[in-house]
Image (cartoon, rainbow over all chains, first blue to last red; front, side, top):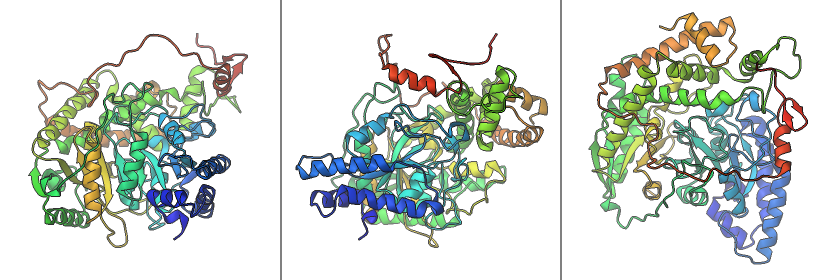
Length: 487
Length: 95
């Protein structure tokens, strides 16, 4: 078996048994990235020297028989909106194309303490804004399963890189499905923890009440391993949860009750604008098959109702751009990053010119669109009608889930509503792209933990299903996902 | 329906320098997206509290004290800026 086709637990066993060295393992991935990056374009910056150095260090510890953490010597990719000290961090944007990170994100510090090997920074839709992987300023990423199709976004690089065996795990971020959607499109596990479970310190902020960092892995056991390494309170992030997230074990699957929201199957019939919101027949079929498989082993399936979930998309596309417009205000050509005041300065006469030109030249089309949408929603005269109203509907959606969880342990849902589509298909109409997030968004609006698990290919293209849990029951949904994976 | 004037006004608030072509296409985009949000008007939200943060229950406080960092970090940060003058970041006149 090729080294880069292993899982984390297989690699760890082999490292401890000295079947190969940490250096050989890291080198296998560096070679794979160099071989494939021209095609897949999952990796923006390669950290070759540091990776080799760290791997050699791990080998020294192994030879001295020093006990090592689980992720020691395990190579990974980090989404390029998570800061790694001394490495360029671009957020997939021209406005940060030469920005050097001055500190490590808390999750990166934790991985480094674990001895994990950071191979490089992975491609993403600009500022994590996008659902397909087509909106990076540094070129699109390809889906390893079909190079004419999108890998999903915004964590396109972490998902595609893992699916292409360019790393053993990766870290992404999820604001409206940006881990779970590419996981579904690339046929890997993608997990968004409960809001606050993982520190956001060092994550370039997109929408602060929605963003969470989470792992991509080849199976649930590996996802759980990475989650354990990065979970925990952080004094540098006031929104990180102070209480411990408890482990969970399922003694008998027959004790479980899983909910299926009836509204998810009827969404397409209710939409008034004529756009395709609902499940494609293939995905609906696969979801129903998956539910049956679980029912066959004795798990109880119960229909639940989430009456306000059909408004989730509108709520998200008001709240998220509003927060984006605030978070991206800092990219102004003054303190760091691209500045229109450098170079040909003939048109840049005063302060406001610097702002207008820097942001106009530095931001891509979709980023500008979201900033405009957010600024509009927050502006005087519209603030009450849009932003405050959306926040109130957010409460209603949160209450729907609270009620559903009185009767069930977790909720089953689709991941993506469609199979991976071809490049360019959804670029003309922004709304058609936004609709991809339909089944993802509720977990971000409510802060609940959610995982996308591969559910088998359809026409050679990956499909996934989603499991959503109660807040802080991250380990419970990992266990349920484990049961599903083994079916 | 969003007007061209509104688009230009919003762009100014957002400090985005838009071309005429961009103003037009954003006018179309914003109008159709905001139309879609009209869905929310059907909902009665009287008596509902707005949610700004779903999972948090308490404010986190600390002493109002800074942590001293190295001068090396400070100079790295200053060097990240497009223009410097000594130990300062240089910008265009504000007043």
